[in-house]
Image (cartoon, rainbow, N blue to C red; front, side):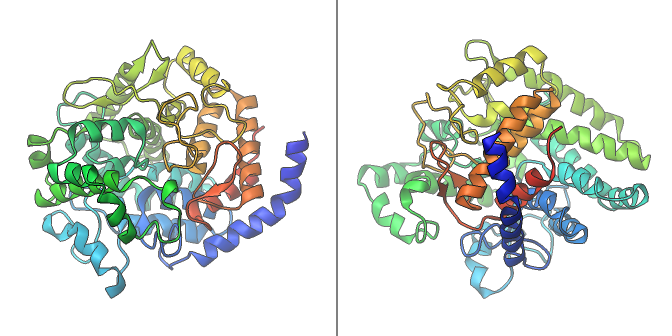
Length: 449
């Protein structure tokens, strides 16, 4: 009750601060995640931002999503980044060279990979703020692009039609240096030149040239060796002009990620609801593929750890390095109830995910746990928002309320940061972070009954 009263007393200031951040980061067509460090438009950032903006300015929330869709490739892919224009960002655009692919949009520079498919969620949330007629108009406007995107996910990222979609880069899942991916990266994907840099400790010299550590302590970011490895993968994708057939033909680094597929499952349901509302039937083959994803997802469950794990695309070996990705199975909303109960028990376990702060990105009993290091410990507000949605799905209302209040209290006390220390809720990473501000607004204005 005391936490509740403190949060409510601060709610007016929190809403004002969050609104100001979104206004200051407004770029017209989109809202940048954070000044200087993240100047471009990111896919799932804009989705979370739109979810908050719907409470402030419904037209701006819609524009946020429509601006994402302008970057859609001819094959249906929605890229994880749409780059800002101007000479200042020419190096960023040159790094990706999206124009090497015949599928890339002609006049917009983008990345060549995607990100968690959160768009249908944002579309639905915006629709909740519209009248029935306005909602149908809104759905009809975005529906063709949404269908094309989900069809692309199955056509290119489920080539064997097994049900789960694969990811080809850690940046695609949004949790860049999460342990399962970094473990695989370190074991199989470090090129000889990167190993030499690591052996000679040249990474310390290279770290001085990084843009992200100029204003943020290096211990709050992932290591330079990890970053070089990620760029190495990206360069490989670019050499193959982002052609998935060429990429998979010679790639050992393709993972069926738990978080990505959980988000896909939930957004598949949203897409079906959108289609039903506007009375445009989805392709039956697509519906069949969607159902198969739900069935196959439970093959990622491991009885020894009582968790969901990502798995290697080629070997189907489960990658058992623990992370918060397992909790997003709750967001999917289709896992067996006994599995859901097992996950909630770990959320409540003080030796696992329960830190009395928002849920950390890695359980505290993991050897990977580092409370200050990006996706290897810190709490992220977007992930906690997804977990809260999942808890509500399964009727764990008390747990959802507790996590909502903990999340709001953290933001109220520390401000709108990129991520937080799970042990004391101190803000880390970029300040004035847009999705934190947006989701603070949504959590504050959407109490759980």
